[in-house]
Image 1 (cartoon, rainbow, N blue to C red):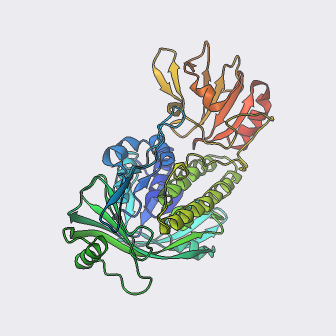
Image 2: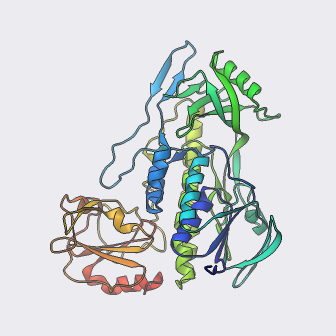
Image 3: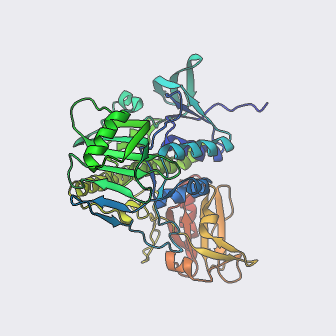
Length: 496
C-alpha cells in the first residue's frame, strides 16, 4: 500500500473553487485534503455558465471536453409582451479566432460541473471528504493547526497552508476578522430546478422584463431534463418554494394555465449582494471564491471568477512549497482582488440594466480581457511597443511541427509549467531546467508559424522571447540580448 504524504494544503469547501484548486494541486503532486461540511454534493444549478476564459482553464486541467459534452449552448432569450407576442434575441457571440478558440459561453448546471470536476480529481488520486467540517484553527509561524469534526469524531491536522473556499458565509473569513464590506442590492430572488411541462426547450423564457417585482425567467437546463425558474420575490416574509406555490407563481406571471411544475429537485431564496473581502491573505491562510467575493448572478461572473482565483493560487502554492520565495504568494491578492472588484462592478451594472429591461451580455462577460499589468510578476525589461504586453492573457496560435503535424500554442502550455517561446531565434537565452519548457518557433526549428498567427497575436520581432506563466499569462517579453534580465526574473520565481 502506498504511503500517504502528510497534507501540505487543507482546502475547506468542495465547490467549484475548492475542486479546481484540488485538481491543480493534485496534478502537481502536492498533497492536500479537501473537506466539505455538507454530507453530500451540492444538488443545485446556482451557477450555470462557464465563460470562455474558464473554458481555457478547464482545457488545461483536462476536463473541458467532458464539460462540453455534458452541457450545451445558451438558447435565445424569449421576452414575452403584454399583448401575448414575444421577441427572440440570440446570444451575441463573435466567431472564434486562432488567438481565442472559445467564444461561446457554455451552459452547464453547477451540480454537473462539480460532479465532473470530482471525477477528474479522482483520476488524479484525490477525493472530497464529505461531512467533515473545520471547527477551529490556529496559525503558527510554520503553518496552521486545524481542528476538524467528521464522521469519526474530532482530529487535529497541521498543514503549511489553509484555504478558505467555504462560501459567502465563510467561517474562516469571520474567524480571521477580515471585513466583508459591500451592500445588499435591494433584490430578493428565488431559484429552483424543476421538472416542468408546457414550455418548449428552445428558448430562455422571460416574463415581465423591467418589472423588478414580477420578473421571472424559465430556462431549460442543458444536460438535464429540468428547467431553472428564477424570479423576484418580496424582500420580507417566508419564501414558499413548494410545487404548489411555484405553480401559483408561474400561472400568475405567465398568464397561462398550461405550464405545470411537477416536482422540485432543488430550490433556494436569497437576497442579492455585492461584497468584497478587505484581504485575501492572513499569514498562511488564503480566501478564494465566494469566501472572498459574492456577486449578483447577472452576467455569470461568480463561479468563473472563483475558478480563476483557484487557478491563480494553485501554481503559486506549489512553487513556494517547492522552494520559491514566499513573496510569490503575495501576488495572489495583488492580482485577483482587483479582478473581483471589477467583476462586482460589471455584475451590478448588468443587474441595473436588467431592472430597466435592457441587459445585453457581450464580450465583457467572457473574461478574456482580464490581465495583471500592475502585478509584481509583470516585467518589461525594455521599452517596447506591442499589441501584447506583459501581464496580458497569452493567446493561442496554431503552429506546425517539424514532422508536419499541426500543433497549438495552448498544447505547449498545458501541464502547469512555465513556457519560454523564442521567435525566429538564433541562439539560446536560458538553460533548460525543471519547471520551464523552452520552445523555438521559426525556420530550422521544431515549430513553424506558417500562418503567421503567433506573430499576429504576440507582435514578436525576430530574436524575441515570451515567457508565459503556468496560468497562461505573459510574465515578460525579452530580447535575445537580455539573458541576464531573464535569469534574474527566473531566480525571483524560484526557477533560478
